[in-house]
Every structure is written in C-alpha cells, then in structure tokens.
Image (cartoon, rainbow, N blue to C red; front, side, top):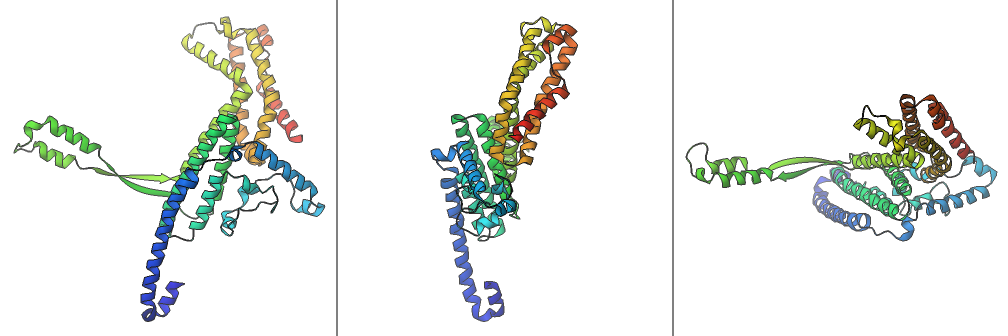
Length: 393
C-alpha cells in the first residue's frame, strides 16, 4: 500500500516513505529478536505441567466427551457430521489459526472436546508463531525463522516423548511423538516456503594441521627455497568456509521415520517377543555352528519351541487389541492406523515364516506336530480376525 501511494506521488511522499521503511525495518528487526527469544523460552525451554504429559488419559477423556456430545446431537447434525473422533486436528489448515488469537476450533466447535486443545503446548505455540510471522516479515527472513521454530518444536516433542516414556510406556511415548509430528508436517504444508536454510561456517582444522607442520619444520622456517615452512603455513593454514544446509522439514521427517521404526520393533516385541528371541538365538547358533544340530540344544527342543508358539499365540490374543486401541486413540484415522500397523503385522507373520523354515529344515515330522507352528496363511487369518473383532467392538 505504501509503495503504491509513493509511486503515485513520488515527490511529496519520498521522504515519508524513507521514514516508514526505516520504521518497518526496525519493527521487523525487533520482531525477529522476540521470535528468537520466544523459541528458546516458550518452545524449547517449555516446562510441561503434569497435565501436559497425561497421555493417554487426556485422549481418553476427550474421546469420552466427544462421544457424549455426539450422542446428544440431533439426527440432522449427526447426518451432517458422521462418526466419532476424527482427525479434525490434522485437517484444519493454519489459515484458520492465523485468523484468530484463540486456538483453532475442531468440528465440535466451542465444546470441551476441542481437539486442538490437546496439542502439546510447544507445538501449538510454534504453529501459531509461524502463522503470525508469515505475513509480517519478508520471505528470506521467514525461512530462517521457520527453520529455527520448527527445529525447536521437534526438540520439544522429543523431550516430551522421553518424559512420557519414563512415566508411562514406550508405546505411549512413540504414539505421542508420531501423532504430533504428523500434525506438524500437515500444518506447515500451507506455507509456500522452503524450510531449508544455508549456513556458512569456518573450518579451522587446516589451521591446526598447518600449525603443527610449522612446529615440526622449524628448521626450514627461514629457508629461501619453495619449502619454506612459514610460506607453507600461510598458504595451507587459512580457514576454509563450509556451507551447511539445515532443513527443518527433513528433521521432522527423520524423527517421524525413526519413531515409526521404533514403534514397529516395540510392537513386534510385544506381540511376538518370545518367538523373535528364539529366532535370534537360532540364527546365532547356526552362524557359529553351521554343522551343529539345532534341535539338540536346550533352548531349541521341540517341547520348548511348542511352548514359545503357544505363548506367542496368547500374546497376540491379549495384546493386539490394546495396541489397536492405542492406535485408534492417538491417531484417530483409519488410513494412518493401517499404514502404521501393516509393518507390525508383516513382522509378526515373517517371524512365523522363519520359524516354519527352521522346523522344516531341522525337525522331524513328529517334532513338527509337537511344535504346531502355524502357516503364513493361518497367522494372517488370525491377525485379521483379531483386528476385525476389535473394529466391530
């Protein structure tokens, strides 16, 4: 607006424009400084209250409230807004966040079941900060600030997940981390900027090496030849400029990938821990003793393996519903739940496939009957039946 008025009245407003631009630059400089302070004190340095890390209790409470409100809605409203708990928290764009100073409302409106209130405070603050800065500073400045803000949010989420793991279970910590990283990635999508910044640094390693060379070549310090130690120090001892690319979006992606892999392995241990431990022992034995007889080992007797198979069956029936329930509670999105649980299912199925291969190779038919290892199709059907039973409930 200022540029337009100045262009129409260049002679009268040129001095005014100069003063306004200086004031604008000063305001932006102060804003950038306050943003740096805010990231360090209110995002990275946030001290969570006990209620901030009360997972999964918070989600269970909000789900109960949402279900109560949904049951009280009229049939017309129920038709317009089907279903129970949904990922409205992830589907609301940050444009709605920027339009208000309050927290964005979910599909339940102003009800207590506002899911955005369930976001971890540093994440909510980071997204609100980004939305406010987006139109207040130039593009290059915003890119640098956004990188710092998102990196701070990722750090805060990692610390929160570590605290939850210490007080609750690894499963809760991992799903908390996955949930909030997914929210972060989804909410920064509307910003049409590159979240990567290039930073320059000086590498003084060559200075150190050149100094050591100068010390060891003291005899040639004043030599008049091309092997002059002082000349070599001046030529080789200059610090080198290094360019580093810092991408906060990739940082979030790496955290998401690492946490998902940890969840898959942990869920696999919960569902088939005894079987996986046996497979590791069997693999170690066969690698160390290629000609040895596996079934003669104390840990690999047919009776012992049969007990392991039975125990794994029991774990699948008792723990799979609780894992599925946790996925629904934290993610509240069937597609995301399926994507995350599919590798866990494959891990369990592959464990039984490996056991079946060992049984065929090392055990007799009678011992195979005693072990009673299910086939790949049988274990797949069992897992599908357990998941179907849970979804019907």
